[in-house]
Length: 460
Ligand code: EZ4
Ligand code: CO
Image: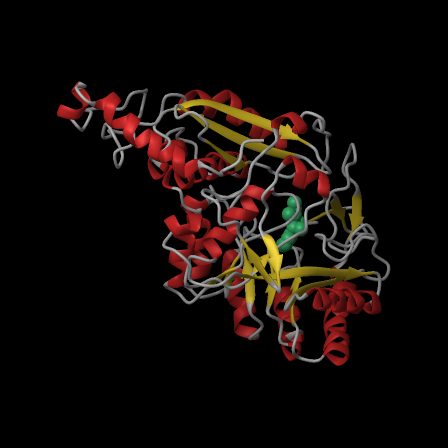
């Protein structure tokens, strides 16, 4: 498998090679080309810091299922051995993104300068006229991560250095605990504490409701609770707000009685409540001092956060279903949330996440990027590169990937004493083993769905 080792030598070699190959060409005499080399490309200089101009030569889309489905983007360049790997996994709609990348986006990238990361982002976001949406923004994230990976490798630096360098030792991480009753959840939190976690999410099954989000029997400590066993068609779960609203405050009363105040706890309401229910839950949870309460409302109803805010001081987090910077603006500019939780894999990657983080900084909102098992290791790495280079990082959701995933997509950030650490190798530090990926073909899989007792559709 290709490794990043020795890229320093490669750079030295290319620097000298670049000087030779460029000498005497018209490009040196006329450093700015009037237009790019390919359709719609940006004007660009003929060389970068003494290195020869770089071109994208191929865009490979790899769909693989080493435990669950992932979509990887591998961007090859004209520099021998230099490529970048991004993640473009959208749980339950993987093939739509893969097709967007293969059929629509790849032809636009061939011949383009991979170093123009922001320009490519703008070109792919505004260029198609139709903007936003999870499929398009996941495809963009895959490209964006691969381009940052290339930039880091070319510079000989981990991506966080290109983003401004370290602001902290590592990214404070949280684990997931769940169970069929309070004792099981308590046990899960204790296990997280034993592993060194300082923050843990807690979800519990609700009596009379099968399969409430995040609590199924298949979730074990150290894994994201709940979603997507590989089933041919989606399962149907049952949800009723009243028993949920009665149970969750009791869970946290139990946890605080048994575990004390030291451990930071949080909870994901997963977009299932209406405004007054959300306000009630936030208010009832106040005595237990959550790190935050996540996704109390559906992403369509941003103005309803005002009602929740008026009734409680429980910190609020939101954002995994947002796809653009502008989705984040209303909640941040009114300080209606305390943590912005975008998924870097669904909001166009690092290029957009930096802007979301800067916007949040101006309003004292911290970041808590989404980090479930259904986005791949390159997105987890990107999360941590951003986390450790911004001033307003809050917390990082994380998972431990199963062995098969680690073999096919190596380099996920490592967990150490409660923190996430990225590798100190140039680029993102992640890779994809294309040969091994072929051994795990795509398997159709859906997220579960939910209904109320009367049979009507409910947010899962
Ligand atoms: O349900 O990523 O905070 N984490 C979550 C996740 C999401 C899944 C959906 O694919 O809400 O578990
Ligand atoms: Co969530």
